[in-house]
Image (cartoon, rainbow, N blue to C red; front, side, top):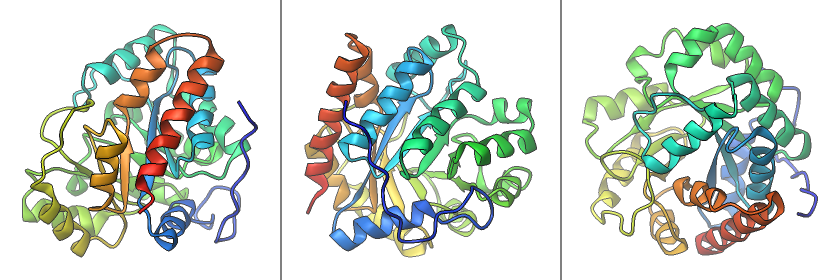
Length: 285
């Protein structure tokens, strides 16, 4: 795999913290200037081991990902489908901890300015201690945290602590979210909003509901930050269709599946980078 080049930022890049350059805003601005949706790629930290997940994360960056999601494995991932559940099981079996995932983030940050968002559940964060977790994110160069089971109305003990370290909190919305939830998420939004394109759990699907267009448009109208669509995006064609509706598209299970197909670390990295490149090409309008 080729060396990953560091990206030039439109805003000053400083040490992580409240005054750090906003890598997320800069990434979406670059994509907006090019007239394309941002590509957000997901890799489970520690799957099947830390070294391989570092290589897979860097392969996503090499393939053209605009933002990287790193999963924090958890034993009860209620929002995740079988593919990511199995990835979490492999990572936990390998002894992966939140510290290990932060090591992956730090390794990516040492080689790239791509924005990094951790995706994990509230329980491990509370067990670790919010202050300690936020400090670890800041040291590793993490830009945001996506917490599927954290409601915006209940984020008062978490989001401000993360914000004090320059780490944004990303909230999820779904087709079933009512007007009050959309309003609450828009008020609390930092970084970006994550719209779940389907009801149910994560997982690659062969089709995505066409009815979400008006819903996404209404959310974007209210949101002060970019809106990305995820869950169920498994092909370049789907990415292109959804990219026309939102500021960005998240691809997770389809990448995790390619990692799970096995082979040498190099072969997996090349397979992932090739797929990510195909997704990025599809998002160029």
